[in-house]
Each structure stands twice: as C-alpha cells, then as structure tokens.
Image (cartoon, rainbow, N blue to C red; front, side, top):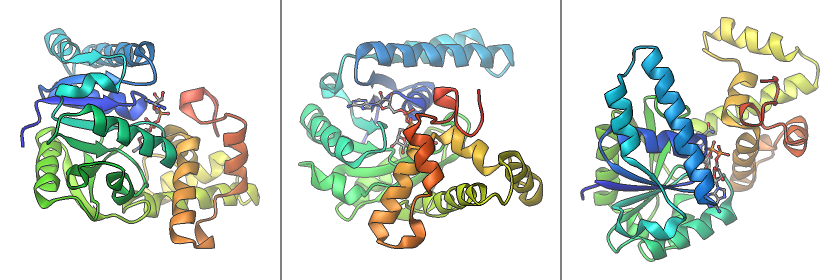
Length: 282
Ligand SMILES: NC(=O)c1ccc[n+]([C@@H]2O[C@H](COP(=O)([O-])OP(=O)(O)OC[C@H]3O[C@@H](n4cnc5c(N)ncnc54)[C@H](O)[C@@H]3O)[C@@H](O)[C@H]2O)c1
C-alpha cells in the first residue's frame, strides 16, 4: 500500500497537527472540517506555528513554504475521493465518529484505508460501520502531534495484518515511534492516563490540595513535565471527560466513574487552553 495522498477529517488541534506532520513528510494533504472556513483557519494556524519555528531557527522559510504548499483545505469529506488514507480526527463522540466513518467510507475510493485518531473508542465498532472493515485501523497520535514521538497503533478485530503493518510503517516514515495496542477502551495510554487525571479532580474536589499544589507536587515529585491540571487543560476537558465516559461504559466498572467537578467544568464550557479557560486561565 502506498500513501501519497492523505485526507484529514477534523482540523482541531490534533487534525491540524496530523496534517502538518503528513505534509512535512511530503504527502499531499486535504483538510476537511464542518466547513471550509474552519479548515482554512486551521491551515492559517499551522502557518503561524511554522513562523514561530522559523524564528526559533528550527526550520527555514523554504521548508515552511513547502509544508504549506502540501496542505489544501476542502469543503467536505466528499473531496476525499482520490486519497489513499483518510484519517479521522474529529471530536471524541461515538455517534459522530460512526457517522463520519460512514461518510468517509462512501467518499474514499475502494482499497483506501480509513484510520482514526480516537483516544478511546472501539476501532472494531467503527470498522463495522464501513464496507471495508479490514482496512480500518487506530492511529492514535499524541498532543502536540509535531512534537510528540509516539503513535499508538490499534488493531480492531477485523483489521487485516496488511493494513496494520502498512499504516504502522507510514507512521514511522513520518518520524514517529509506534506501539501496538489491543482494541479495549482507552487502549494503553488513556487506560492509564485518564483515571489519573480523574483522580486529580477528585483530590481537588476533596480539598487535598490546590490546583497549583497538586500540579507542582506531581511535576517535582514524579519528574513529570506537566502536572495533571496543566495536562488536562492541554488535552481539552471535553476530551478528557469523553474518554472517561468511554472507559466507564466500556468496562462497566465504577472505578472509572467521571469526577463530578470535571463534569461541571465541561458544563461551564471551561474546556482548557482551546477555550481560554479550564483549570487555569490563558
Ligand atoms: N486533545 C488531545 O490531547 C488528543 C490526543 C490524542 C487524540 N485525541 C483525539 O483526537 C480527536 C480530536 O481531538 P482534538 O483535541 O483535536 O479536538 P478539537 O476540539 O481541537 O477538534 C475537533 C475538531 O473536530 C471538528 N468536528 C466536529 N464535528 C465535525 C464534523 N461533523 N465533521 C468534521 N469535523 C468535525 C471540530 O470542528 C474541530 O475542529 C478526538 O478523537 C480526540 O479524542 C486528542
């Protein structure tokens, strides 16, 4: 399988990052979101980040121009008819992803691969919504995509070995290191991360420490680059809660019950960095 043309569906923080990494590796990338305007804004944002990288001496203008020239915002997923792989990176919601997978399945040519950047949702379930279940795979990038090395690869029950290995090789060609996870809720990274972030919210709610005390304790005490609230704000509290719900429902185990304070923050629209306010104000 050759992946020269890539379609990225959902151009938020993760989709934009995936598009940038694919373009840097030389792929022609189509970017689609709810509207052309949103996809165009995502490309502008990438442009701004590349400018910052030039200022820091990490890349030069030619390289930035080359990356941007490989990125084409499009009106909708219907423009993905020529891509070799569609990577879905829309909001973490099962109903939405099922709908988008059906749309990608209709739009993409036979033989093309459908990948998802979902943090927790069953690859097997998404694959079953398509007419090409053997060509569906989990490709879980980390945030921020251009910086973080890992791509957690997830094989659904129906994913063929050929698809899995081809997409794993693609991620490695894009400069990433891959690991392989079975298809259970949250896979490996979020199975461990989300209960930890959820527990930090419980500790805060019980008054064990302040936001800054808890963050500082974890950073200095465990040598983590960020505390749990800084990390939750970076991920997006809506995404953290959505993953917590997938773990809670998927395992039917009360130990994964989402914390009530986390639910309140999401109800308030305090989603973290992307809305300017979460546990911290930006
Ligand atoms: N945030 C993280 O740290 C992180 C890390 C790894 C994986 N993920 C996963 O990546 C995916 C995206 O997360 P994000 O952090 O980029 O979220 P985000 O909120 O930044 O972006 C979501 C994007 O999806 C778009 N979208 C919503 N409905 C759509 C539709 N019907 N059609 C097309 N686009 C639609 C939104 O407009 C938005 O641009 C989720 O599945 C999430 O679980 C997130």
